[in-house]
Image (tube, rainbow, N blue to C red; front, top):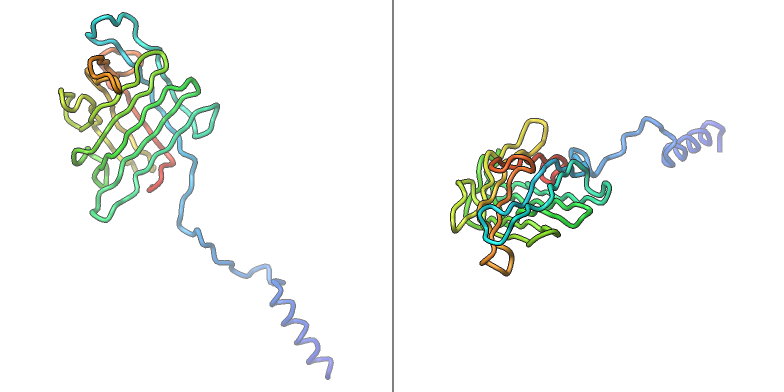
Length: 199
């Protein structure tokens, strides 16, 4: 076998073993943006006009990534076959307080809650846990929680405003509370999420 043939064989073997640093390796995740979910929100469970309740619960303030300092953040705004998006959110604090949105559907660009399956749950370790139906309309007896001004921004963030009036305690409908901004009694709690699935 000539030296030229041997040289060609060796060159072929080197290339087959990955000797070409400029080779393009396919990326199975190309085009998929992955980020850690982050939530920013401040809320407070308040007595409202409830009989026998005199002290509001402590303010719950979150500005953290999922897993940061004992916080948990999950959010899903994945598009569905009908062109709308699911809207599922869980935000938890190290103290055991939590806010969850379950069963909600929003338009492709946000805007408002669609349908009647939305439920808002608020866990409050210093008071009662709360659970009630939600919509984008003002709070009412059958839908005491409002999630309004939902927006999916160009920066891949989700923003919304949340408040509840006379939302019942889970398993104890005779007890009601309000959920508002942490500082201003009648104000909405402003939510901002980034890193959600579906964005």
